[in-house]
Image (cartoon, rainbow, N blue to C red):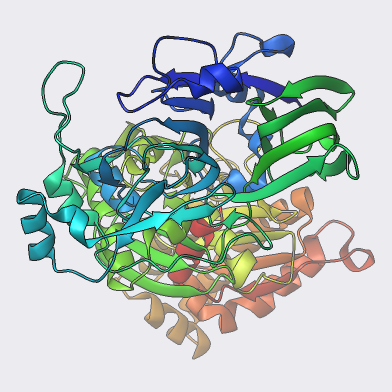
Length: 616
């Protein structure tokens, strides 16, 4: 919990003036101060802390030291600090420009796009700004007018006055006119495409660069309908919520509030003077100051005369999560809504011969294509979850080792996150399947679930108190490699007597061949057992005893409410469940004097891994 006062980074763009130094206390760094980046973690201009134990450190260094949690739970969907706030002093006209959206900017610039809002702090008489087009124009006309310098003829020139607010969504052509002083709240990005610059020269004496091709790609050429602003918020979108605070120092000279775990609070002082208090600390403020209050800081109070913008991050509207399941045979990608419904999915073969980096890049592009196919903007995505077979370092987002897909020390989250602008979480695929069943399948009514996946191996996952259980060391649970018979059959892990050596599909097929002298499919084994074949009855009974022992071992340690069976063998649950229930009732610690967990079959099938990954 912290109350931090910030010192801005400054920019000396050629159109700037000197009001920010003369009137707003920004440190005089030269003849021109065009912008003061008051709240910034952007590497092109980070703000610096001036009080407390982090004095002299950047805001980003504070976040790195204290943890991303200081930003609040609503910021978990962002990879980086989400916003940038600044003062802008336009002594001259800014260039006609446009900002791209996230998808285009990440693909072409390697950082987020930009949606922003302007609050007009002051404006000279007759001042105006450009805000979109007067009428819809074609891409061809747009390009031609740029070439022949007639673009201004079709732009929407809007007179401005103190207190006006404008919301500039990415793709909106815009420009601040001369004589305007602005407070801007924006996405944490510095990507701008300049279209027209009045023929001005840069500091090097050459015309400043234009970005015509990019602007043609991203500009919305339809007129922009200005949003109703001012109530209940000055501006509100998925990236920021901005409210105005006004204390006249007479009839109203004090206000207070409380900051919970949802979001940090940014306070940008546009006018006034007084004190701000939080968590036992009181700091003076004056015109031009900027403060950051960390999430869960509790009560705060402002006293004095004050005109300020207060910015928080709200919960995202209508979010979409991406769940990816990487298997040895195929890759599945699913889009999951806030109710854990699978909205769309795609699957394609997994090529284990390809380099891991190439596979990940293909996953990223296929994810973007699936979103586009379903007309879902990338902005709606809050997280990407990935299930991978093998040993996983979830904190680092790294696949340590996977024998199934031949990966070793692969930085999966980092690679995928370069293309998709969301936090990327990874986990073992069996854990993801268990989590999927726990949130949306057979285990949705339980908080403690263990799932046994009975396929080519024996995997599984533990969900305790609604969370994937990993233990205190890397790697997570390995249900299939608990011993059910000392010095028993050799296992693929190198030990003997593991559950996987008795309860996997290959183990059951091998036992059937040893008993009958010939190969037979899984369905045939169970068909013969249910129709009186003594050999297959013994094979299935032996299978049930080993699987039952494995289940009892886990139940006695973790005491779950529900045990689920998944994988290929679970298709024969009608045969397996009754004897397994008898074994559990007999052998679980406490027997009839204790509560034996319910035994059921997983419901989601192949969907479980995608839904679980999306829920990480």
